[in-house]
Length: 300
Image 1 (cartoon, rainbow, N blue to C red):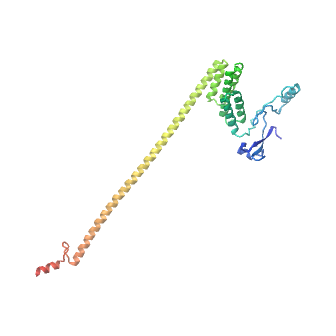
Image 2: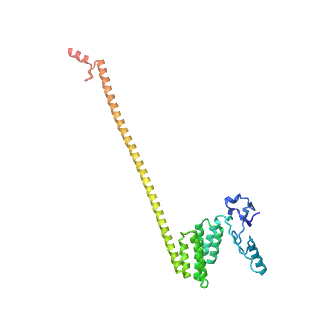
């Protein structure tokens, strides 16, 4: 048995995270669907339906439910935050609800947008930064409601302040959260608090601007380093090519000298051979005529 209440849902197969596909609480249903047990939270995800009952966990809650039933009043619903219970909705659920809320906000349906933002928060933001963005958006929707509803202006501003403070606590660098705190305080005539929130917004904006400038400078420096490295590689390649060409030219000159020496040696050897042949045949090497023929014709 488990002290945690569970809800059995039939879900599309694609909505189950891969890590949960082999979980023993995930069982196959019809084609494309699975049965999945998820922690039960009254009005919580994935149904987010109103009118659901909570399970009492102590005597005080039991007494409150019985008293309400005997008096004919609405049965109270208790919320129990349990950090050990994790939402089993896929990560896309948060993004889908947030996008839905943003569309309602753009359409001017601020009340429905706030409800959709709350549904996104119940679906489980991936990080505190994402949760801060949603709270800040809900705060702006409340501020817009305050601007158009004079009787509930202060109430909407107070709730906007609460949501903006939550956003600032989750992400102290969220400029919009501080600006919406300031706007809510101005509506509530809290000038000192508004000025403090404005100062925080300016400080966050300056810090973000400095971080962005530093990031741009780092990227520029990295790009310069890459260009320098590329130029050095190109210069090294050109130097290697130049040295190769110089070596080839030197080798070509050496080969030309070798050819000249070879030709000179060959000519010298040919001349020596001619002299030896002329001496053997009794020829005048200078005239190419036999010497005996010249002497006998002179004797006659």
